[in-house]
Image 1 (cartoon, rainbow, N blue to C red):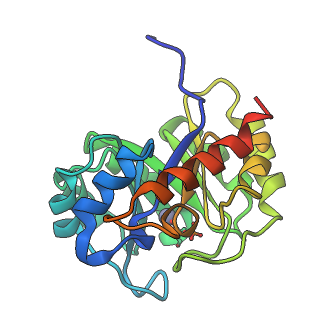
Image 2: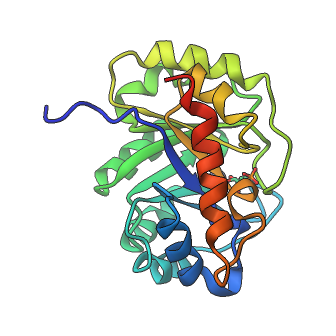
Length: 231
Ligand code: DX5
Ligand code: ZN
């Protein structure tokens, strides 16, 4: 093993709340304002009731991402598209446990394709479902809203899920990512429960733009600072 696993707080703005006509500039603006990772929400209008974009868009924005390209697949099936998203430049590919009957095979295929494997859990999915998958994943994404849309309300019942997950993970090099409804009010709850990656869409992009990116930085700092007193 090399360096210690990074459990420092990372803020991952979701481009779902960015200007869809200007992704490249939005990504560069939010990175310049302190984003640690870039979260990319892929939706198929089938697994979730909304449609966003696929591998060609991911490939096009890749050259604007200088941090980590964190691709959240809200699609089913997953397996036929893994190679396309790897080719598009994903650093982490996260599939939903609920996306099909063979999540074990999907995770094997993601790692086999040479990228980090993430596993996302819907709010109704018990955390024990990850027990036999812990040695094949690099990240667990705990959904704190039902996937499909930005700007929804945080589901508080997921706090206990994250605490249990943190204990299950122990010393394993697995990130705990939280996705949905993260604000300076909810972020510290999840940080305290054991999360290290906080996805935030509306709370990061609100009030700013490519022409006026300073609010992005203020919003990121507000989330970060809200967690400071805990560490
Ligand atoms: C929801 C997406 C989230 C979403 C978060 O299905 O996976 O990444 O963009 O948006 P906010 O932070 O606005 O809840
Ligand atoms: Zn997401």
